[in-house]
Length: 156
Image (cartoon, rainbow, N blue to C red; front, side):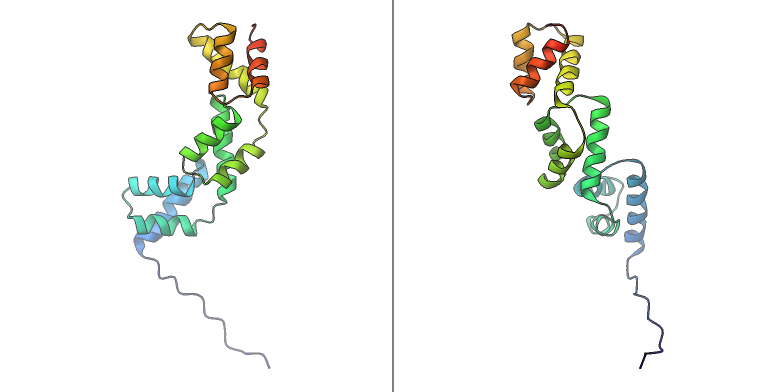
């Protein structure tokens, strides 16, 4: 026999602060990418309590791998990174290692072209010998092959 009583909707016992933090979190996620920790920090900066911010992050439904991938894309839109440099930057932003790894593995970057862009950026502001520029790119986390490609592509 089928129970004829209607299902009782779950009780939403969130506080007004938690609800508002969730609304603010969703607004931020609609135009920018955040790590879970970065979003908590931003919400706390906005004046929400740690509990309210943690509630919002837990309930916002964000896919943190996709957030890391979006953040990686935004970084690559305005600057050049090596694979390890982008991983480190995402980690600094608060993404967990597996989220940063997902992003750098799936961002579609051509790391040789990133080395070329980084080499050009250095030459736009300073003078380097070929070896000095290769050394700088190696320091930035590019492989030897990527660094040599980068300096060759800018005329060395």
